Each structure stands twice: as C-alpha cells, then as structure tokens.
Image (cartoon, rainbow, N blue to C red; front, side, top):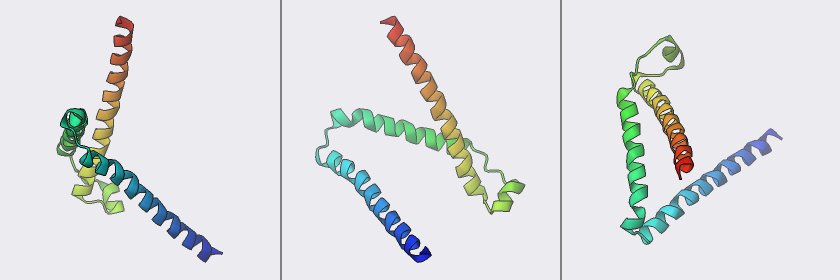
Length: 110
C-alpha cells in the first residue's frame, strides 16, 4: 500500500510540475508572439519596480548568523536571502495598505 501511495505522489508531483511549466510558458509565449510595447509598458514597469524592491531588500538585510542559524545549517548568504524575503514581504504589505487607502480616498473624492 505504501508503494502505491509513493508512486501516486510522484505522478502527482510530475503532473503538477508539467501544469506549472505550461501555465507559466503559455502567457509568456503569447506575449512574445503578440508583443506591443505600448500595451506591455505598464507590466514592464511593474516588474521593474518589483525587481528594485527585491534588490533593495537583499542589500539592506544583514545576513547575521546566530545560534538558531547554526542549528539548521544556514550560512550567511542564506540568512541574507531569508532576511531579504522578510523585508520584501513587509514592503509589499505596506504598499498594498497604502494603495487600499489611496483607492478609498480617491473614490470618496469623485
């Protein structure tokens, strides 16, 4: 029975991977095939802003190693990646909060 469950899990992971690759590649191929800079400008700017936030968060994170890091075998670079991910999350939550407030105020002023 365990062998059957193990095989089923492997097949499920493979199918999930194929689905993930297809769902990411098809819009990308469609965008490349029908590329119009005027329509894609907003998306390119948003991706650029996200990359700037990611790079900023990585540069700002400390990468310190503490006892908990040593316990799990985390090196300085991995600690810097983790810190950058946490800072990115904080920044994006703050941006979402500001956007929600701005949207509500803009709707009230119309």
